Image (cartoon, rainbow, N blue to C red; front, side, top):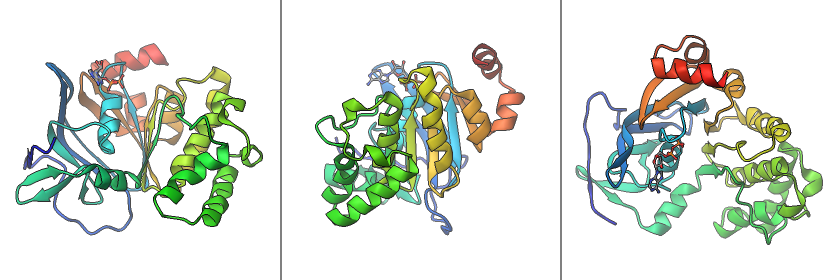
Length: 275
Ligand code: ADP
């Protein structure tokens, strides 16, 4: 599809004008909407995420959290609005007042700066742990094999799994696989890391080790956006909590404020159920 999107110049939207950048990984989501047939999965969502911060997205099932996350690296195309990372349009380039979708190759290149961690780990089953981690930086020409291996061992130390370098994914627990998936995403040195319910496929006793790794990434300079139902994690790690219902952000603020003194009735009801 290469239909041009009209630029939406809503004054309340996140600013699309250039701004001086002091730190990398700023995400500006401006009035995005996304429908599946007649169903509106995202309805005029705007959100600015500051570089290096941790944002947790909460909300009932089906509220659009995953869809929002997927739009941030253009795994999902928006119908309206736009997203910028450090001033670059995600999935598009601008000509005049119109946005034109980038070609697949350019989209893939753009995605290098945005790591994505899936609910089900998605490691390559036919590759060892080490090969899983070094593959992308080599394929994208970012690192030579020797450098990629060196970097992979550093990342394995970060996630506490150096001794598993030569293991196969199937030999690892779910928690270990997810920690390797995080290391793999970090191997491309992304500015932004997106986590889509990273612990929801795990047995309860394995959740902590994955959250601990994400916690360690917080304040490392990478911007983290995490969809999760782990309220304790949100309380402990998030700078900001965003609460979604029916494709809209109904409430957003500091973790302390949203979790302790929610103003929206839907947030209150949700928290009463999960806490
Ligand atoms: P959440 O992550 O909050 O559970 P999602 O973003 O996954 O919500 O989904 C929001 C809504 O959009 C759901 O009702 C879901 O069924 C619908 N949806 C998501 N992806 C698709 C798709 N590819 N096709 C049709 N409907 C979809």
